[in-house]
Length: 207
Image (tube, rainbow, N blue to C red; front, side, top):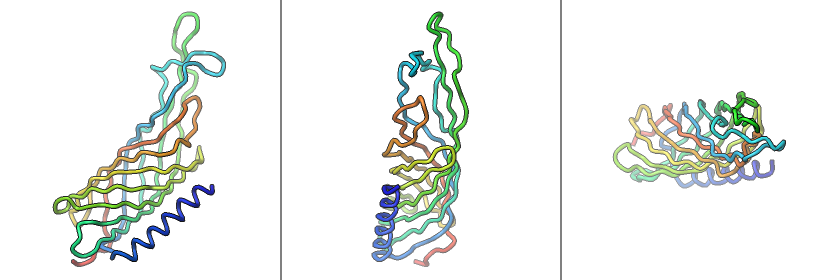
C-alpha cells in the first residue's frame, strides 16, 4: 500500500509543478474501450505433477471500458503539451486451464471462469503535436485494481491521437511495469492492452 500512496503523491507533486509552468488549453471527459493481451508463463506441470495442456490453457482480456476526466496543459504557441487525467475502468478477464491425461494424452478441462476488475488511475503524459491536430504522447498511469483481485500496477503508455477540436480520437498501447496480478496457475502475469478513446472537451481556451 505504501508504494501506491507514494506513486500517487509523486504524481500529484508533478501535476502541481506542471500546472504552474503551463496554462490549461482544455478540460473534459474521456470515454474509452479496449482489449488486452496479458503476457504470462504457464509451468509444465501442476503442483500435483499433472502436465498442463498449453494449447487449451489461456488467460485473455477480451474487454475493457471506462470514463475519466482530463486536463490538457499547453503554452501559447508551443507544440508541446501535458495531459493530466483521472480514470475509472472495468476489465473482464477470461481463463481456462487444461490438463493432459498421463496415460493416453487426452486433454480435459481443469477449470475456467471470469475475473472481473475495477481499476482507478491517475496519469501524466507528455505530448507533441506532429502536424496540425496529430499528436504523439507518452506517460505513466499508476493504477489500483479491486473486485475479484486487489493489486497495484504502474503502466506506461504511448498514444497517437488527432484533435478535431470538438473531439480528440486516440489509439493507445498500455503495458504494465509490475507483475502483481496473481491468478494460478498463470505466473509472472504482465498486463497490457490496446485502447481506443474519445476526449470531449467541455471547456477550451480561445487561442
